[in-house]
Image (cartoon, rainbow over the protein chains, first blue to last red):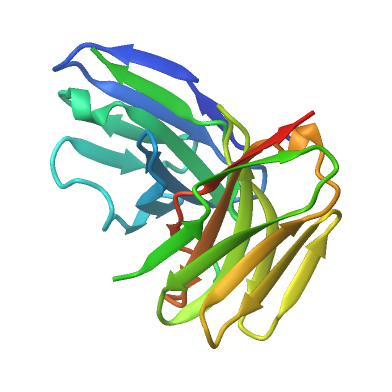
Length: 115
Length: 113
């Protein structure tokens, strides 16, 4: 049973380009969460999705950032017109039912560097 | 504002020694508290999860405690090994009906031979 998969593991973009980060949850998991980790900082919640629905996007910047979790395929975190401040590690987690004590399993992360 | 504070920020111990990491939180309403281990360049891996009614939980050489009255938790590592070198993150979940988490910044542990 493969764990949470994220790709690419490393992504380099120039300012103004678009970044697309992919996350495939664990088999049987329909809840996906995206987090951002800045250097020397803790992980910060960005968005919580179920299949085809955004449940909570309160941690995601209103502009340039979007997320989706289509019926088929991986969840995508999209960052348009990237800026240097977007450089961070982006982690995806998945869980089985999204309830309070449900364990979230994390992927290895995508490290985005904006030049 | 929900916050999780961890101490110490970093810690160096000799292989074979024990250590205790601390976590204080102000998350309301409290649902559960988790400790994660994050190796450098990897995603966090769950060690323990405790709900309001649980005071202690063990996972091998890791033992977590929870005092919901004082809103404190600790993670005790026994007989440390070199592979224990990692960041240990305290994570608290608010009772919002689903699992959105507040993360501490972590304690960076280095186990030295």
